[in-house]
Image (cartoon, rainbow, N blue to C red):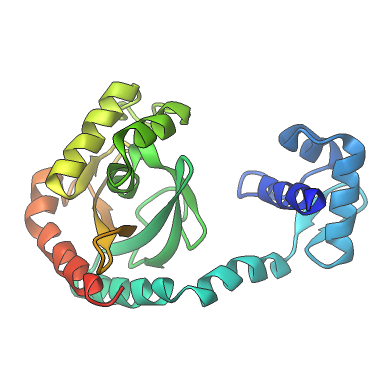
Length: 244
């Protein structure tokens, strides 16, 4: 099982910024020895999850089976996808759903009508929770001490001039999301982007995910996005609460 843990750590090294890695790269990024990193990479290549040109390694599409196994075995993702597609068709804006994974949110469903961020988002994309609307409503659903620990463990870089980076500033925004039942991000994640999110609550009152709408700040500043988009998000939230 330790071998499985190491293999998964190696797979997790690869992302949009690191599509091709050497053995030395993987060893450095995982903390594994070069010999262990080499064995993991060779094994992944042998069973079809990676390929190599003799020096660099890259993942193959077979890795998608791992993510698809989760998506296909979790009815929630299909329900969220259907709800987002209807919402985006109605409002003409991109919408997403995510789960909290440690310090990050992970996108599990998305209906994109246009590209609103410089970085493309899709199912499986990760963003930091501390500066995203979905991240803040998901943190707000945790006990306060647990939410604080996750915020403290975050990198908390200033992605724009508006990004809240201190623990207290982020926690104040998390508290506001807990009180209001939604969170708005105004150009904290990327200049020109606003987003609004609400939690997805199941029939037992447990927060199981978050959904949001992201759009252009020039068209939907905070006051406008609350007035025009929040009621539609709350309607979807109520619909989901009856079926999840």
